[in-house]
Image (cartoon, rainbow, N blue to C red; front, side, top):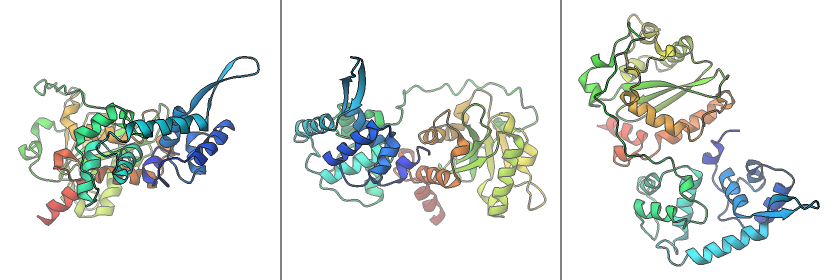
Length: 353
């Protein structure tokens, strides 16, 4: 099973009850894993169960006087009650339980950032009794004021350091492909849609399966395609299949593709040529080596994919349905750079315009 299940199932009920904690204690004692316990509790997420096991953790003595770590439902319930009493009354959102539950679900279960969670309230026309700023949510998380989420549930925060974009290294391992230096200015400035960045996401060492990911530079739309290997043939075959599916729309959609100089991307002639007509279907440009910022959209979205498919995971285990859910999550994620719209919303706006 993949981490995706944690983000696509609605949490059943509200906070854990004492009866549920008793079940957790029993199931944990006989060796059930957090994900399995969650299923037994009617669809509780792995994260919820893991947090509860940590909350009610207690050290006990064995008959030979050695220690063992176990979970106590009584300890878990006591700490929950103490936290609820101590933290609730002073919070701005203390009386707005629906908003608290919404934020805990969006951040803890759906892997949303505080900004995305707040923006979704606007995008989905949700109504709560209390309004709260993104900064306040971060403050609450840093102070551990929520009962079921903390800053450990947040994506990795940016360092704020900027790369020096002037230090461009000349490509030496791809002398035949067209350099990014020749890419049209309107692509660099993101003045029109139809220009994509392409990369591969690999799994654990020894696993052949990989993901071919394409990111649109203006809308941040993402396509995720599972390929049998990180090879030139697999990449070309995936694009051929996509063109056959899209027909003439492929050329309109994929005006250019920018990728790195990885060996799987170097067959530019077959990436560019059409399988449905004479001539080319797109134009490929190659970024300079060691210049990941030239494919910044790709790199940022790859980090979002890694929330669900961590490094070292076996990509062959992920089904087409699971990958489509990840793609759907990314394309419906509110983005600050798009003024709070998701890629799908931004794309629709451009289509109407």
